[in-house]
Every structure is written in C-alpha cells, then in structure tokens.
Image 1 (cartoon, rainbow over the protein chains, first blue to last red):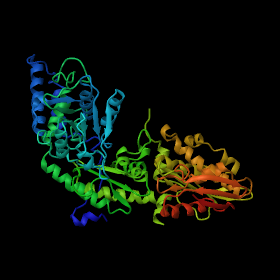
Image 2 (image 1 turned 60 degrees about the vertical axis):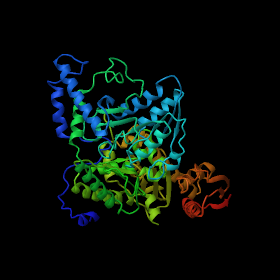
Image 3 (image 1 turned 135 degrees about the vertical axis):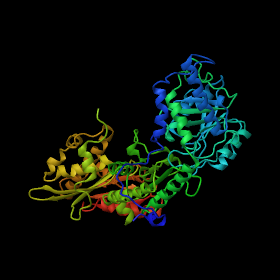
Image 4 (image 1 turned 180 degrees about the vertical axis):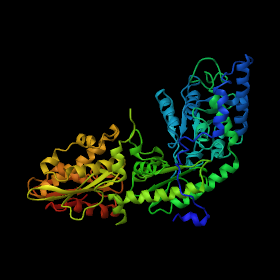
Length: 401
Length: 203
C-alpha cells in the first residue's frame, strides 16, 4: 500500500493511461497552446518586417511585440532586451559564444560542472578558441560552493550558473550570485530553463545580465525560446543575415512557436506551481520509503516544484526506465547504459555520487497535468519494478547480506 | 530504420528465463563491473559422462540488453558439451536475440566472457588445464573495490600476481578495513572449488 495514500486521503481510480514524468526533458504542449498557434500556421503566416510593412508584416510585428512585452514583464525586463531563439540550446550558445567572442581580447569564464550540456560544450568550444574557462565547484546537493563564490576574483569576465538543475532540481541562490558578480563587475548569465515561471525571477533585483528561457518545458511548443540580454551589453551574433532581433539573431522568427510559448506563459498560474510543489513532495515522500533508496538533490527546500530524483541500490537505471515504460510510466535515468556515449550523468559525478548511485538514478519530472492518482501509481509501479530487478541482481543480494 | 530493442529482447527482459542463483551449480563466473553499470554472474551445472551443461542460470545488475543477453546465453548453453559451448560467440547471441543496437553489443560480449571464464574455471576444476595469470586476472576482475567502485584489477588493488602450479600469490593494496571485509571473502568465493591455494599478501 502506498504510504501517502492514507495520509493524504487520495481516492484511487485504477491507472489506465500513460503516466508521463519526463516533462523536464520535453513537456506536452497544452491544448490551448496548439489552438493559439493554429492561425499562425494558416491565415496569419506573415513574418515581421521593419518599422512598417504590408498587412501581413505589420500584423506579425504587432503580435511579436506583444509576446516580447509579456516575456519582459515576467522577468522585469524591457521588451527591447528580449531576443527570440529556437530554445535553450540556441539561447545558451548565443549568450556564451556571443559574449565571449565580442571584441578582440581573450576572456575568462566561470561555470559549474552541473550545467546543461549546451552551456558546458559552448564553453569547451570557447576554450578551443583561446579563452579561459574554469569550474565553480558544487556541493553534494548541487549548490554552488559558497566559499568559492566569495573568493570569486575580479579577473573573470563571465559567470554562467543555471537557475535550476535539470536532473536534481537544485534551485541556486541566483540573487546571491548576481550580487557577487555585480560586486566584482562580472557579466552574469543564467540558464533559467528549469526555473522560469516556477521560481521568482527579477533580472533587476538579481543583477542578471543574460537569461535563457525555453518554451518546451512549460507546455509550450518545441523550438521556442528567448534570451534576455541586458540593454547595452554587446554580443556577437551566431546567425548573420537580415539584422532581425536588434541585429542579434538574423532570420525569420518562428511565429507559431513564439505565439505558442506566449500562450504557455499566460496559462501557467501560481496555483499550478503550488500544486506541483505539493505533488513532487508527495512523490519524494512515497518513493523514499522504498528500501535502500537515496534522494539526489536538495533534501529540504530549494528544490524546484517539478523535479524528483532518487537512486535505488542494486539496480540499473536503463532497466528501470524500460520496465517502467512497459508499464506506461515514462521517466528518465542518469545511467551510463542509457546515455549515447555510455557515460553516466555528469551531474551525478559532479555532486560526488558513486557510479552505482548514478547508474540507478531515476528522474521523475511532473507537470501541470500530473494528478495525485499518478503519484500513487508511480510509487506502486516503481516499487514492483525495483523489487523484480533486485530479485535477479547479484549486487543487491550482497547488499542485503 | 528501426530504433530500440527487438521484441525478443524486450520479451526476455520482461520475463527472463533462467534468472536467479543456482544452489547446486558447480561453477560460477562474474563479468563486467558496477562502474559500467553492467555486470552478470553466471551459474553452470555440469554433469560428467557425457560431460554436458545441464543447467545454467544468471543474475544481472544491468540494463535491458544485459538481462536479455544473460538470459539468452544461459538458454543457448543448456544441453551443450563444453566444446560446443566454447564456440558460442557474441554474434550468435545477437542473432538469437533478433538483433541488438550496436551500442549494446558489449553486453553480448560480456555474457560470452562470463561463459568463457566459467568454462576455463571448469577446466581447472577438472584438472584439464592450469590456472594461469590471464585467467586469474579475469576472475579477479569480477570483484568490486567498494572504495573506487571499480573492479579490483582496474582499481589497482591487485598489485602483483605470482602463480606457481596451484599456488596463487596475490598482493593487494586495500584502502580500508571495510573494503577488506568485502574483497577477501569475494576472492575466496571466486576461486571456490578450483583447488588452488591462495596466498594473500597485503602491501
């Protein structure tokens, strides 16, 4: 019996449908989002022109500006500071390469080892171009090491620290990092993909100079995103062409995706976040009652509302994932076996988890559509799978002995 | 192009045949390591006259492919003579499974490796071959160093080996008492029934 069922008085209906818990990878676009996008795939197919243009261009320009204003308002920025991108990878590439490559001098950048690959790989590439990149260590719950942050030197040009971790849900103290960066006159970029709308963001109060968001994790369409670049901060574009997006990103903006993302932003309410917070807490509470399980990420607060991650002794993550998938439960693992390069999660490695814990790490990312019923079913499905896999595991027998 | 695992692999993963330890096995072998997230233990019951593998089972700490390949190889060896079993290659296994993603071929190799180690150990038990350094290392690779999460050979716990007939002199560098409590019995277990004398020197 699921330990949280009685406690929270959850009335169960048998689980018949799929339970999707991989929303931090890509979320289901909201039906309203799809409806909002449709006209832009049909009669409103125009793209923005300049200050004036024909009917289609003007209509597109106005629609795009409304979205710019809405996004700017959600993070306390100005519309002129919002650049539309194709999502998190482009946003992070543009912020990092754009900043590092502007001007002639070589620059110094600092980041954490638990960033998304698009941040780490962009910076690795900048190293190849002669820039200097170093790592700001994180401790075992994924938080930036405070002492190291305090010791930040003035010689650094860029610091890129994510708002929320994609695997373990750690919410960084962005305000503190922003203050430190401001004090040392360092440009501060944050990948806010997993924090946007879920945690409070104020680019003014938090001293953020560049901020990446993406529509694909907030029930918006894939291929939608934006980058905030503080007014006056110069960057080199990645895409050259027609001078669109204030000369920072050439090419027709993807109107349907942008309109869809705006609708996704409008739909997400504080009440949704509160509900998700409660559900992920329940999920963590029930799953951590499984024998020999271990929570990855923050134990108390400062965990984002939608990401839960645990490791289970004696079993391997790909087996958990595939077994769960057979039962209609969709989740994700940091296991080496599941990764395309057969290496276990760099996040697990950076927070000091053993290979074994990394290989069994199981991430469940809920969404606005997750129900209490789902949470109970997840517990029941996972408990059964883990017992089944442990029954045939030579390692778990040893643990028990 | 078809992605993912074949139906046969998924079926064996969901309902593995021959899973679990075997009480009356007369030889066992471990291949793989926890660090790679891929490890299996194979159990064989071999009867004399005629010498045949009558039963095989496995335990697996690993992914879908690891479980399916382990299960498949135990089915493939049942009823085979030692010579026939030695001829099984990873390709045979991949074919029997209706294909395997290329990135997972190493799982099939791992199962074959476990089988070969088991058969070599059987050769030693029967007095048909000597225990040599290669086999000793392969056997020791099946033992985990809890400090580094690597096998004790890769982790550098095994400093040197000296083999004279049936005497194995193994010198070990073990970090902690706890690790020692795990590693030493595991070595004894790994060479069980092989009629070798193990002399462990700690450095």
